[in-house]
Length: 281
Ligand code: ADP
Ligand code: MG
Figure 1 (cartoon, rainbow, N blue to C red):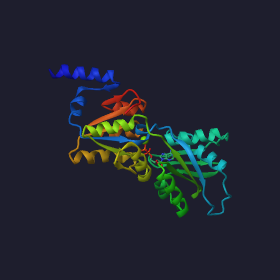
Figure 2 (spheres, rainbow, N blue to C red):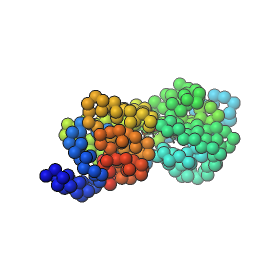
Figure 3 (cartoon, rainbow, N blue to C red):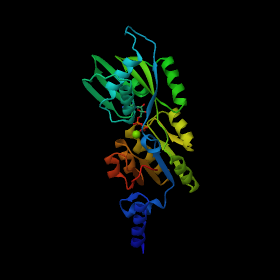
Figure 4 (cartoon, helix red, strand yellow):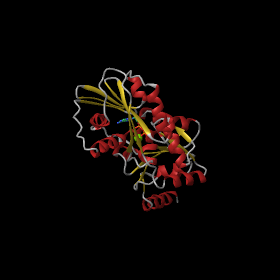
């Protein structure tokens, strides 16, 4: 009777907007103990909005930058990035009516940020790790500004021009409407829920709190997400990983069950054993 039952299950899944790419995924799902969610674009809408542009006091001989300068450079830096944070910055610059200059080089550093050359300057935009890697000093004032923004659940990014910090740019994303219910329902079924993110711990915990999630693995670069999944499996947990991004594919492949979001990247959808057709966890 098993093949018939699996076929009915796959059909029922399709009715509920869940594409099940092979009955083995359904069979494994019975033993599930833990569901790990990617944060950005999976639990949150992935449509972040710029909320704060904080100019940092000058430390060197560079002329002071205005908010408009900062937005122009930031938009130039992000023009070629596919990250949701990039889209927020580009939109904000468009709104303020400033046309960003075109960068002469572009480098994306996954899980960290971007580095471009524009207007004869080197512009870095990203997190603390990016600044540490490139030898940019982060002042106490900049650090305190970031902490304050992160406590509010915002993602704070640092902008440096020629290795000098110029501004902190904060971006906020909202959680998906049904995400809180999904988490509550899983927990009622005795399944542990974990948030996995490249974002920093404070921002991640502030968002997790809104969703009723108490286990957070933060500050994980995309290359290491698969390793975190494997670590959970090694402790005997049977793990589903839910994600959307291009970078999520290795983690989806490592999990016992990979669940891709239908609105996400093609790579994720190719890798996931289950695909949620609607953008609804
Ligand atoms: P998530 O796990 O939430 O999808 P990522 O791993 O993509 O996050 O990114 C982790 C962090 O790296 C971001 O929170 C941000 O601080 C920084 N970052 C990544 N890409 C960019 C970018 N294009 N511009 C600025 N910052 C970025
Ligand atoms: Mg992501």
